[in-house]
Length: 67
Image 1: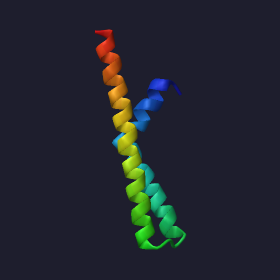
Image 2 (image 1 turned 45 degrees about the horizontal axis):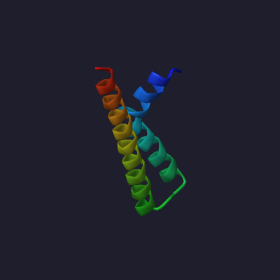
Image 3 (image 1 turned 90 degrees about the vertical axis):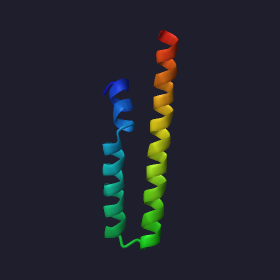
């Protein structure tokens, strides 16, 4: 997998939604209480937003230096 492929996957909303769905299903299967499931979901989605922002800013900065 190339660096560009990894960046594209990490900035994909579909990836983060799929990850949250997977983690939520696991937590429910292990009978974790609802409050904790909601907290974990919020943390994962916040992390996904942060990662997407960091990569987008890096890409924009790199584009500005090229031009």
